[in-house]
Image (cartoon, rainbow, N blue to C red; front, side):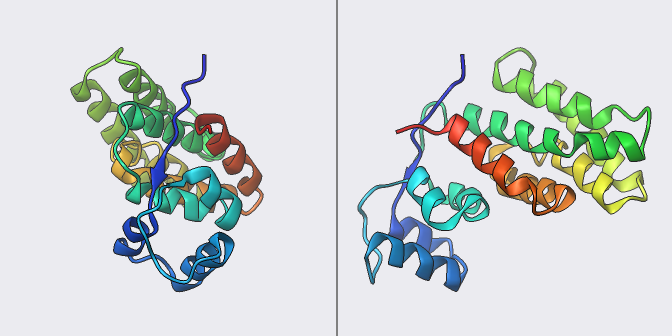
Length: 182
C-alpha cells in the first residue's frame, strides 16, 4: 500500500524561503494573485504550476504533517534510485548507494535505527567522493544519509536529476504524484 499525504504550504511560507523570482512570478500568475497570503496551497497545485524541481524546492515551506518525514524519506529514496544504474555501471561492485537507499526505506518504515541508517548513508557519501564520474557521484550522493533525510530531499532530488538528465522530469512528476494526494 502506497502511503499518500497532502502537503500544504502558503505563499507567505514560500516567500519566506526566498524563491527564485521567475518561479515566484509563475506561481503567482497561476494562482491569479499579485501578493503573498496565508491561504493553503496543496503541493500538487505547485506541481501543476511550476513543475517538479520547484515543487521539491517548495517542500522546505510545507506545514508539518504526521507522516511527512516518512513520505519525504521514501520519495528521496525513489529519486536516488533513478540514477542508481549509472553509479553501478560506472562503479561495478560498489553497492554502497544501493544499501543506503534500502536503509533509507527501512528507516522510514521503522525497520532499522537512525544509527544503522547513518552508517549506510556515510558509506554512500564515501562512494560519491571516490568515483571519477560526476553522474555516478551524483547518484551516490543522492543516496547518502544526509541526502535522504527530509531537509536534504530537494538537494538529493536535484543531484539525481542532474545525473539522470532532463529526461528525468517526467519520472519525477510521477514519483511526486504517487506520494501526494488530494
